[in-house]
Length: 332
Image 1 (cartoon, rainbow, N blue to C red):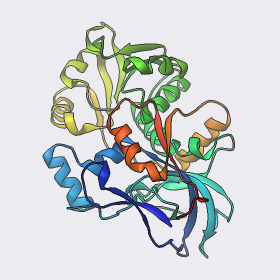
Image 2: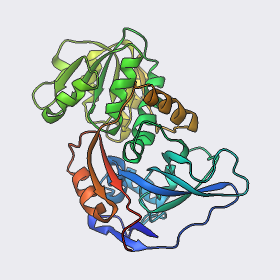
Image 3: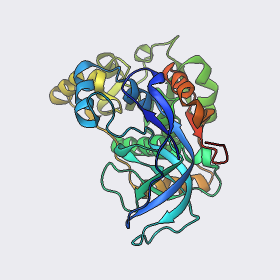
Image 4: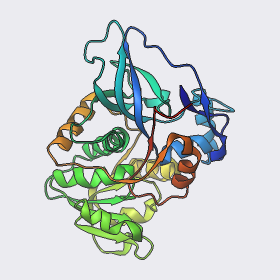
């Protein structure tokens, strides 16, 4: 089968398409024929490791020092079950599924085996929404579940005001919609090209960060969800209500200031890595099938153009999601 192989950490060119052995499912596994996967900002960071030194060192220790231990990148997928192990109960051949591989990665390929009942941080799959294409469904497991995870931690209530910084990406586009479903008044922050899209998702107010500083607006919020971790934390504190909540999905750049604030103030600072469940996938599927949640796709690339896809995402500014399509009919 064809798969993307990461030869080492570095620029997009370290990614190569190679022929590798097609996996065979164990008794507790399903074999998925992948039709769509994604490239996220997190995938780009994991490939390049252009991160603060200590954080990059920790990642190398966990995932491979000179190159990723799991050579095939990618976390999200949508596809069809081609085979099931002897002990699998919930799925059958031909089921259309969507989900994630978790920290084992491996979705940027034609096939992948995953356990029917994964452990923590192992992703998991569910039957995909009936009203979505493979390309659309592949974008939900990461952005949708992370948005759901953090908004639950924020305990969003009807009538509260939430500000979402970095609202135009994979997580933010779902966070806007989920916050609106909770009855919140949503202010979404991103760059000029994304503002119309943010409004179309239901944002009550949009802020162009290239022209305005939300910390000087005079508005005060019950919850701030900093998706990208690039807002000045010390300045953001000015616009959170007393006992308000600050959700930090990418804590690397603000870890120490956030920890100090959590110890010395009444703010509820939430910093963690999201760990979605299969139940979350099913919940999101129900919202999608009820017409209450949709995805945003910026561009699609064939698997053979994985380098170009990483370059595009690495430039920043993508609207929602970048999808990788897998054509099994092409000659290998």
